[in-house]
Image (cartoon, rainbow, N blue to C red; front, side):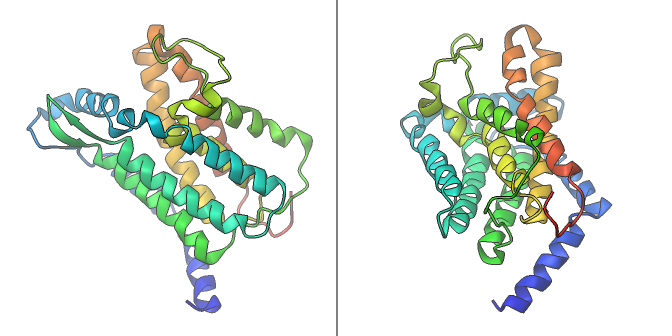
Length: 267
């Protein structure tokens, strides 16, 4: 693909992702019904989604959790060290990550419903993945240092908390065991890794792919809202700490959407 064609497509994506109807599409995606091989009462959709998420494929891949903690740590280290070529590998890995989030967190085999898929989330996350893969070609993410005010680095603290995910898997209570930095499932989850990926873009704004930033932030806001509802409103006694650990997703995604439109000079 020629550089001229890439620029035209990029300009179109940046324009489209600011349209009101683009945001409406993401809202309408939420109404895609979940698929199950066994029929279910449409009024039980909340229960169906809960069971799918609780029994998703990701729970059977515990041996792989450390791999998906170490890879992002290495990529971030290479970004900090300003290694040439790391941006393209970073974009590619994030794109792969969103495909894995879509498939591993939203597909399950359950006794109640058989083969089951939360299609709304799967479609949305595959769309996010497509935008990250696009930047492998467009190369609009420039991850060389940008001078930022000190206060803007608050995103690092929240992203680190999300990546660490200090939650005891048996009690769902706070557990700040440092081993979790390398062993838990957060490296394969949308809610914990999206704050990390968005933070990197925010700290390099405006030299990044703004369309990718907005689409990722929009998906983050939507899924964070679901989690805030479940953790703080529906089951606060048992899931309040899980809710706290989803605040980084909410705040950082909101920040990504709130950044000003297309500026060519650094913040």
